Every structure is written in structure tokens, then in C-alpha cells.
Length: 275
Image 1 (cartoon, one colour):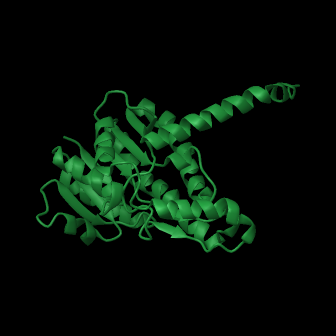
Image 2 (image 1 turned 45 degrees about the vertical axis):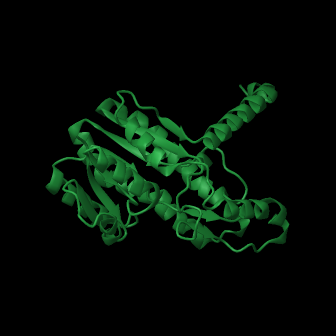
Image 3 (image 1 turned 90 degrees about the horizontal axis):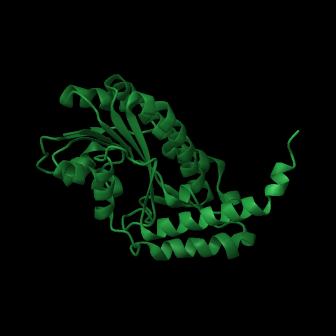
């Protein structure tokens, strides 16, 4: 059985991953900004669950969580970087403060978690990093530009990390979910910047409305998503990317088609620039 280290484990997909791993007999170091939120989901705390308070923006808390996990279980096999939140607004409308706070959690929080956990995985010469991204990190849309940018950054980190860790026996997978019926689109997980520039009403405004209307109506089943994520850690050669949901597949395929068309259309310009 494996030992999991899950961030943002108190709700949403993180809670689903935690539950699925526990149900399969794995052990889980479940971190959240408030460990009591994890414990409330498991009033009779299973032997395999260690709930630890750890804010991903606080490196010292993450190091303490890792130390507690190693003291309890002796190893860490799978790290699920799940903690994160969304931000809606046109790029120009989003304040510097809001953008930096988003990247502190969605990007630097992942880096903090990696720095805390990777020494253990490297020493073991085994393990699996799961970076929970988004289809929006592969193909973003109006009003989700900054959120998409944070997940685009996670894509770049994951690609490089994949090549850096492969010789050490550690796998890396970035998960790209579409819309799943969690609380992600609610005010609990999604921050909305005020619509302050009239020129963006037609573009970003319509997307704001669509996202709000979709809360609780997403097509994806989070229980099935958690199962798929745990499944992928049990195969010998896991993929670098794992899309989840029909909507994710459609958006990725549309983006690939667009890139191919533009590459072909403007290839002559690209080739004209050589010395």
C-alpha cells in the first residue's frame, strides 16, 4: 500500500482523492489550512489517515506536515498537489493584489510542497507527483485568464519536473479536469473580481454569467474523477497529462487543431527567419 500526501484535502477533489485512497487501503497525510475540516469528514479517524494543518503558502507548515507523516508512516509515495482556487475577471480588471494572491497558492504553493516532499521521494528513488491542474491550463477562455495563467505555469513546471525526476524513478502527471460537480464554482473556491470596465462586458461578462450559471451543473462526477486519479498511480507507465471529462477532451482537441492550422498557415514566416 502507498502513502499519499494530499494538499487541499478538506473538500472538493482533494477530499475525493483522500477518500478513494483510504477506501483502497492506502494511508493519507491529508493537509488543509485547518486540519479539523478534514477530521470532520472522518469522525472516527481511520488508522491510515493523518490530518495535518498546513497552508501551502507557509513552507514551515509543509515541512512539519512531512515530518509528521514520515514519523507516522515512514515514507511518502504519492504527492497530490490539489490546493488551489479560481479567479474570474478580465485580465485588465484583476488587481495586482488578487493576481499575486492567486499565484501564491496555485503556483508557489505547489513549489513549496515540492520542496518539502521531493527530498523523500528522491531518496527513495520512487514515487509519483500528481499536479492537479485544469483544462484551463491548456486552453483558457475570456474571464479566466489569470486562473488559466496559474495553471499554464503548472504545466511548465510539470513538464520540466517530469524530465528531471524520470532518471530518479519518480513519475510526474499533470491532471487536466474539465468541469466537475464540486464546490469549485461557488464562492468557497472561486473569487470574482468586480466588472469594472464596460468594454469587457461583451466578452468576459458573458463568460462570468456562464460560469455562475454552471455552478452545480457541471457534467463531471467528482467520485469518478478521484477514482481515475488514484487508478493512474497504479499503472507502470503513467502519462505526463491526464485529461478528465468530455469537455476537457473537446477543449484540448480544439486547441491542438488551432495550433496545427496556424502553424501550417504561418510556417513560411517561421522558416524565413533563419540566418
